Image (cartoon, rainbow, N blue to C red; front, top):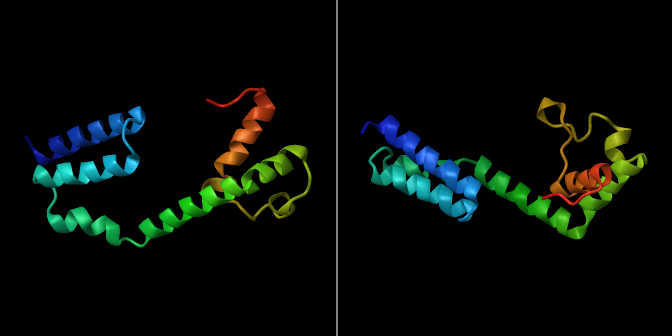
Amino acid sequence: MSESAITFVVLGAVVVLFVSNRFPPEIVALGAAIALYAAGVLDSHQVFAGFGDPVVPFLAGLFVISEGLDASGVTGWAGQQLISGRRHPIAADPDRGVGRGGRYVRGPGVSVDIARRCHGAEPT
């Protein structure tokens, strides 16, 4: 089997495991790296190269901050502000909080709150 075929098989398995949500995403991702190493597609330097990328701790920090904001109720409050139409920092300055592609950056609490208000149902 060629290296590209092995890679696609591992990729397919990873997608299925991510979607099924049977295992934590961290375990699935590490398992994919180990499977590619065991199959000889990657060497040890390539397996660990991604961990040295400065984006990895940055994204981990964003997840921690996002979860903290959600746990403290800030994202729920921001959702209330968006729905009620009151002026708030994002509405007062349209360029603030705009990410790539022009979409507003908001946490899951805001999106859930908007979905509740618009559709009158709990998200699944």
